[in-house]
Structures are given as C-alpha cells and as structure tokens.
Length: 241
Image (tube, rainbow, N blue to C red; front, side, top):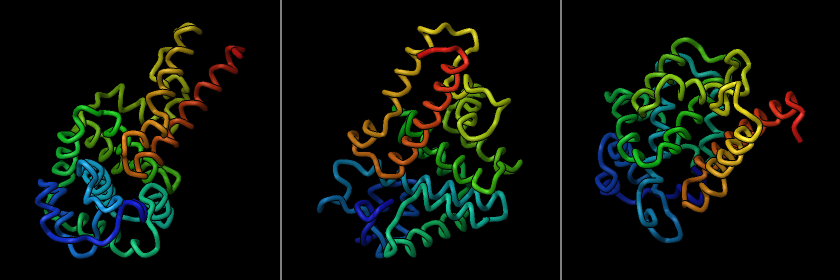
C-alpha cells in the first residue's frame, strides 16, 4: 500500500463491491481508508484491493498462528506493505481486524485463489510476501512453515512448486537450481532460455504495466533479484559468460 493506493475510505458499500471475507475486512475499515487512484474508486477493477487486503489478512493470520510478532517481522511487513505516515494507523487497524476475525486464514486464501486463478504469478507474489515477513527474525519457525504450506496448498501449488518458492527465501540444501525450478542436468542452452523466460515473467515493469499495487511490484523486484542471483551462481560454476 502507498499514498497512491490508500487514501480515505468512503463507505461500507466498498466492502459489498469486493465481496467475500476480504470484502468484510474492507467494509470493516470503511470511513477510515479507501483505495483512490486518480479520482477513480478502483480504476477498472477491485482486484488490486483484493490482492493487498488479502496479503495483509494472511500476514495477520500468520502472526496469530506463530503467537509472537517480533520487531524484525514488523519491519519486514512495512517493507512489503508500504504506506505513508498518515496511512499507518489505518493499516494497523486492518491488520488487527484481520487477526481478530472469526474467519480462518483459509477463507482469505480461498478468495485470493478464486480471484487470481487465471494469474497464479500473483498468488506466488502473496507467498513471497509472506515468506519475506516470516524469515525476518532469521528463521522460518515450524508453525510458520506449516502455515505457509497450507496457504500454498489452498492456492493450488504442489510440493515442488512450494519448494521452488521457498528456495528463494530459505536454504534448501543451498541449491540455486531449486530457485529456478530446474534439474541439475539441464544443459546450458536450456538454462539460459529458462532464465530469460523467468526474467520476462517476473520483471517488476510487467507488474506496473498491468496496474498492480506497489506491494506486487516490490515483491516482484525481490523475486527477480533472487532469480538473477541463482542464475549468476550457476553460470559462475559452469564458466558461462
């Protein structure tokens, strides 16, 4: 979230426009915050609101599952969900509201999965954001790992996909091939082609061009850095230019 995204919320009807448990959260902060983009309520679609609010909700539920919110995790949350000083109180209100709702995380995860079923990369963005927050204190704890696996499963990611995403954030036998989703036996040409495809798919400019919120752009930037670091390491090991 940023000043360009979050402004004054103009009415509970917004929650009805979004619908579902995420709409309930949006409606719950009506009168406090509203996404406002150049005079239009949501531009052409509330999908960016669903993305950001869903990310906040799942981060809140992860904090609840872990039982402890460390200062480093709060800082990491602020890095992913970027807001101006004037918006900070309202974002905290949204976080606290999500943490205290009777809805389990599954309800928010299912709505995100349904909304972005045609754009799985956005669901991967959500998982990347959650991983970034979870690892902030130096480790992903057992309760957090179970939570992240459950969210990934709800999103439709299988175990290999989960491990590929996790490899960008934690050491899984320190394997750069896992970050790229490739086997160790891949030849040089296929390696280069896969890297080019991943760069195009995950470039933050693509997220901006699709009108996605700043959270998605920030996450895409970090993911691209991890992809490039893994490719550079493999290239150095193979002596590629």
